[in-house]
Image (cartoon, rainbow, N blue to C red; front, side):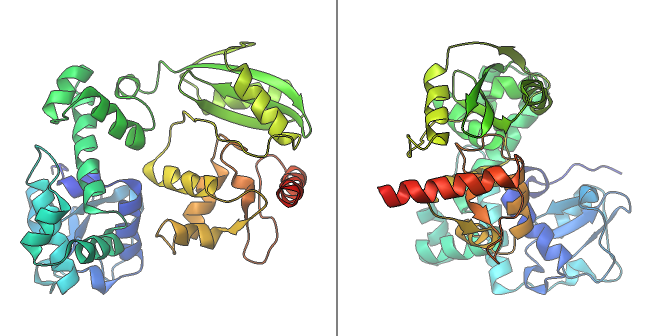
Length: 364
């Protein structure tokens, strides 16, 4: 059986894929007709509301329509009969918009054009699509293009050739979009993440020891601890394929800014980052950077702010895996009951950070 899939199964950014998988997990009949899911281990595809036992998400492929699943070698479920699923108006709209976007690999279709095709206002179309898929039509188109870019790079093609294959208008456009979805430049992705040149410095701070690691493009890690050897080991575990060196003074200004921030003398910390991340992680981390000094947000509030109110656990995981603490202030996220929740560098440090930031905000 072939497992080649339609664009939906390979190109969805993490946010939209999570939305579809959530519909599968909840047997959500509202999404019947918007997509079907196939299971590698059984060779069967189903509608989202199928009452069958849910497989491991690693076994699931997503397809916009049954025909695409069958072309990939899957057969229809005899329990839920996905071909007979009645599409809701919303599901039909999503299917139609996805089809229009996928049918124009030469470049994204404008929102105005999609609105004219569907007979809706641009605002209504944008809102409906995002509510169903978790992303905008433009983000869906960008995800398709980056998926094609990944495919070309995995074939061993050089970046310039891949650029033309996926119809990016310029090299800068290619790097702008691929950075957001790959978490690194296309050339670095092609080498499996190798090629990152990271230098780090460990300095004393008000919370013990702080490791600051960075590339020329931005900060890649900020760790807090008591032992230098543990901090350095954590960095190498985070970036096992990178070129890492210690003792460099290249990014001394960034190090000083972070140390001063921890001491309470530099309240505003706006530094660039260079990290490997999924699209969902980036959205969460951007939301964290928007939390004002001296304020906190709950995990559910962060989930709502990114348009994913049910993704509370996923938000918590994104906070826990944030490599650039302090710069991306994951310590400002607490539980709904007001308790601190978890913190990679210890709850004592989290409490001190929050108290210090509240005092700094009052002083301002």
